[in-house]
Amino acid sequence: MKKALKLLFYLLLFVGIIVGVGLSYIYFGLPDVGNAPEIKVSITPDRVKRGSYLANHVMLCMDCHSTRDWTLFSGPMVSGTEGRGGEIFDQGMGLPGRYVSPNITPFHLKDWTDGEIFRAITTGVSKDGHALFPIMPYKAYREADSMDIVAVIAYLRTLKPIAVNQDKSKSDFPMNFIVNLMPEKAALRPIPDTNDILKYGKYMAVISGCQICHTKEEQGKAVGQPFAGGNEYKMPDGSKVYSVNITPDKETGIGNWSKEEFVARFKVYKNDNKSPEKVGKGDFQTIMPWTMYADKETKDLEAIYAYLQSLPPVNNKVIKYSPPPDK
Image (cartoon, rainbow, N blue to C red; front, side, top):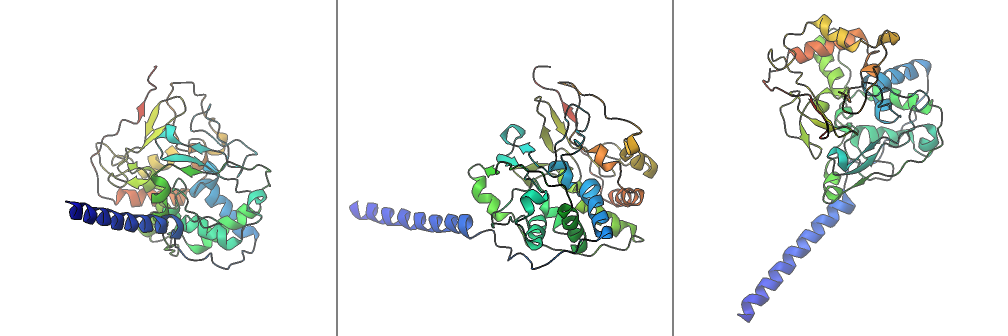
């Protein structure tokens, strides 16, 4: 009996050592995506213009890294807060931690090299080497054209510095270990020829994060059919909104939408033709930043439409809104 207990003790000790070594490697040895590239971004008018377009209307960096006015429909960005960060994504939204968008104006990024910013955007690894939880869709940005990433960096360098230090993000256990497994090396690819509308549309859909928002996720991992919607977003008033099905299914998706209807939906708030409506507690709200997408170029929207229409249709009916419990 004593011999059996002794063997069991040594077995458990061995297993404990293996588990401890494994967890230590995950926590201290990962992520491992390589060093930040040694690059120096030249700031030119054309590059800044492209970067501004991408950051504000395609990749939507300014969406999360600015202040949004949630008293208005779709939470339009508050002018003058571009890049200051401070948006909070936490357990109340069903997330495994408290994540705060950092300040990305030159006030905070002044000590970052261009290569460190490049690595953070494309791999999800910060300046100090720690892993970023994929609230920022770096898994989409890792497939961008390197020159588009460079353009975004050039634009960020031109933002007005805003002197504010945001709280650091923190993952709960066990996500504080799991998050280190998420970053991957970048898989950069060139922008396809715009005449190849399906390939170009796919590129624009990828860097716009369409699949990430319109695919059901749990704990930062996709569990639903791509583009079929159903991803849950908890709003501050306790209501819930769900991303819609954007596959070409005619019953539950956008299979009956024409190209013109698709583009027009994005252009509702173009040039202040229509102002976002006031939203009260319990009223339908959305995280979809319609006001920022309103200035997306028509050719880009048409290409995304063509790509989405080429996808396999998925019959998945989504109830897009659930009111707060007290309403």
